[in-house]
Length: 244
Image (cartoon, rainbow, N blue to C red; front, side, top):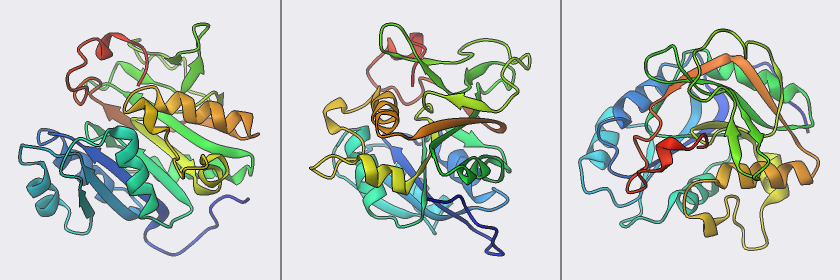
């Protein structure tokens, strides 16, 4: 288990998975941020959960290089991500929400975390669209055994401007080592437990990874923006909870 080796390849050894569901308002900016990275991901897979808006057409137009998987119905966030992961082969997997955007150096700043062979998960600093409010600086485990996003809703005053170990990564923009995913996959071949359908799957995966001996790293210079709640569908209480 080693980190990413230096390479002259203009694309990073990363597979980006984006799950969409009526995401027309966000998906173009999300995909543009992926393609604008200093080293874009080698693979981009968009799994659409039966959108009834223009999302699939926008994906085709905005990012012809992306593989578009149309589920035809809402398979759930976990099932859709599992389908996307199964279609890819690169040694690192970026799971990205359609309402998230990444800064150009996101992958350059976060991939060195995997130079430590014990690291299976990496999280960056996510800001709200205003660029001043924190959305997540990695996750910790709350006393209630729910995920708590560090800095959630706080002004970005520099409190989280240091690299350190965390419990896990917010699923809005999380990078995983494929070897870790292969290590913790369940007997049915599920990386994300599809019993969750959506929400709290990021905590569950981090928990399983930690139990298997893997660590999660936070890299503060890898940052992006997340319009939390924009993809929450019919769960109006989701925005009020400090979790992804």
